[in-house]
Length: 278
Image 1 (tube, rainbow, N blue to C red):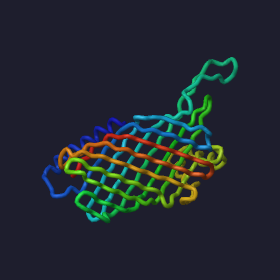
Image 2: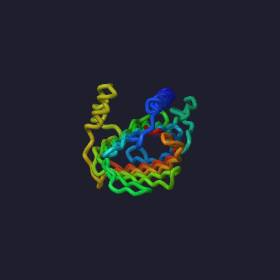
Image 3: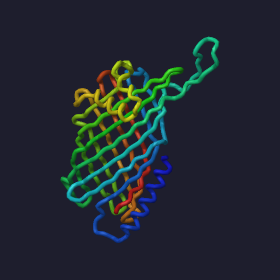
Image 4: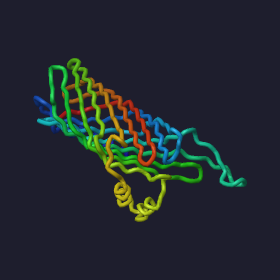
């Protein structure tokens, strides 16, 4: 499925290059595709006191930008992790059973964000933007501990302060740094001890979409006293042509939530990016 998505995206970019082959004074749109190696360190006291870690190559990011009077940015990020405290181990269900081996945990992280911003200061070499972001984070997490497994979730839908600084060293080298954090968010997390009566009622429909919204309904509106979330991105781009940039990026994400119990989540990533302007 991911390969089909990548091939479709490349095809769309190539077609776009043909449709927008005539030069323009200013390119108002861009699509950036990124892929790299990402690291996760997560501790959720609802499920375990241990810090679970993993490096993963299973990720991608897509960013669409449109700049005219205002700047509009739409982002999609996907990460799949298999974090563990220690490596897999062998165990027995009863003394005379056959030897079994644990499997790694399975975490899926998705971010869907939209930015509305305005350029507030500009000079020959730099531009500074301020705006607001609709920041939407969804974590789906399966914990495997021997013979049993447990499902956990974290979802945050917030309104965030957002800022970006773009610096052009010269005609070929461009740096970009952006940061954002939620001021308030609707947060839904797994209940204390993972499963309670309400959790069982939420999954009783056996319908994925209904269950998802049932989880969200159990959430609450939170602010900085219970939710601290911060994202930072640093991009370097090399200008191949007026339309094409290539480059690298570092991204950092931090989440801390203390309701009902402490959750701390760190993500780091190094990406290779390609950007098409049209």
